[in-house]
Image (cartoon, rainbow, N blue to C red):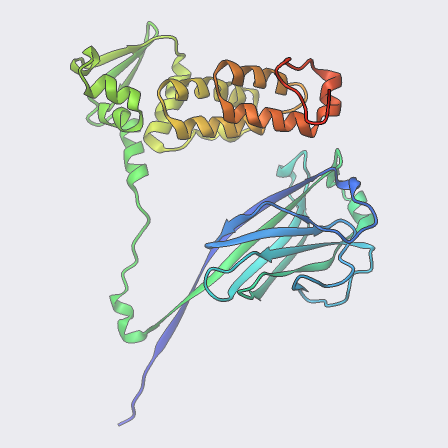
Length: 350
């Protein structure tokens, strides 16, 4: 009787993208030096983008070009996806590079190249394009604004799982956890809400005391301790706008900020200021850091002085550090535009 065996190799993938902004693009001239992005993680691996504004003259550091091994002539920019250190053996991945308008990312991608499947060795190795974009075409593409260039790199890490076919029926697919969605649903439908929070004269919110207590040690002391609020079915919060409390509840129930907070609008920035104060008031540290991250991305010459003063008044060291770093990076233009607090000084200046 013939002995027949069978096996299956099941492929799956994880995809992520990283936006790499090069500010001061014109400062590097006539050199084969590269600029490295911050490390980003996709598929359990650490990656980075290597960008040569004037091209890679010679292949070094294990760099390999997808599809063409000709050394750069100096007329093109070069870009590579760099695997910093594989966690387990070689890594197989697809990748794409494209350029985006720094001022209007929503306009789409230009100069998209990639899609090849490559094996990255377990040691540090790069794959990419020595001849990515001609320097002359780059200048005419409209992708450089205010001397800034944005490179988008999309990485799809491919993994495989091998098993005997006789055991395939025993493999049960487990869906992702629905805990956050289920808890967030309690806020939307008000099911079994046991408390009312009063904001101002008219605004009322039906909440679950256990959720508030779990997310904030301040609420925990109020609702679960010996304070008078723990024996009441309603509490009143003073000195807070109802819209701010609504965003606070969204975070406490859903562990995320509402979609409008992802936008770069004045409304979102103002809310981040109010929410940071509220997060500090109720000792919700992660929410506070989310607000710091949001505000740090809105810094410019016109707002950094106000933001620094706000950080000082609210004793937010992380936001203060972001402001000072921004000032150091752009101290020449800032010194002409704003009057700095006397407590701030720059290294190397008097």
